[in-house]
Length: 323
Ligand code: AVJ
Image (cartoon, rainbow, N blue to C red; front, side, top):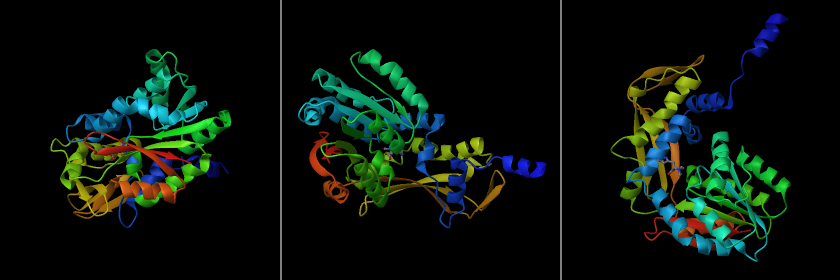
C-alpha cells in the first residue's frame, strides 16, 4: 500500500516537460518558441529588439508614437465606455503611447493587460500609474483566453483587444486562423481587435533580422536547451548545436532551427534522446504577411477590416478589425 502511494507521489511531468519530450520524441523534432522566455530569454529578447537588423520594434513603435491620436479616435467609436485588453502586454513601452492618447481624449476606459508572467503584471500595476496617474488599470495574470473570460465576467462594456508586436507571427497560418476564430468567439458586435503584422518584404532584410552576425538570435534559440538542462535535468552540450534561420518568400514563413553537429545522445530526466549528425530541431516560426493575407485572415475568421496603420517604410502594419 505504502509503495503504491509513494509511486503515485513521484512527480508527474510538468506541461513544460511533457511538451519538450513530445517534441523531441516526434519523428521530426520540434520545440515550442513559447518556452524561450525564461528570465535569460527575456534578456536576450531585449537585446534582439535593440539590434539594428531587427526592424520590427522600431517600426511598430513609430506607428504608436506618431499615430496614436488617430488610433484613439477610431477606437472611441461613439464615445461609450470600453475595456482595453492587451494580450501579452510586456512592459507596455509601445502601448503607453496609445494609453496617453486615449487619456488625452478623455475617453472612459479601463486598461486590462494580460500576461502569462506574474512579474510583468506586477511591474505594470506598479509603474504605469506613476507615469499615467489618471489610468484605470486592472492587470490579469494568466492564459489569454482564461483571462479574457475573466474580463468579460468583470464588465459588459465594449472590448477593444490589442495583440501587437507581431506575436501572431509565432503561429503558422492554420494556427493563426484558429486563434483569430477563437478570439472572435469571445467578442461581440462593435468590439475591436488591433493586431500587429510584420509584412512580407525583401527576403534578405527579413532573414537578416533572424540571423544576426553577432549571434544574439543564435543564443536566444540555444538558451532553450540551457533552460531544459536547468529545469528538466537535461544534459545538452550547447556547443554541439548550431542555429539555422531560413525565409521562404513564397509562403512568408521565416523559420529557425537548431542543428545537431554530431551523432549524440541527450538525457532529459529519465529519457534519452538520440540525434543524428545534421538532424534539425524546428524551434520557431515568424510568419510574414501581405496585405491580402491579412484581409483574408480577417474575413475567414469573422472580422471586418476597418483601418491599417503603417510605419513610414511600410515594414509593419497594425490592423484594426471590427466584429
Ligand atoms: C516576439 C514573436 C514577435 O518572431 O519576431 C525575434 C520573436 N524570434 N527573433 C519574432 C523573435 C527571433 C519575435 N516575436
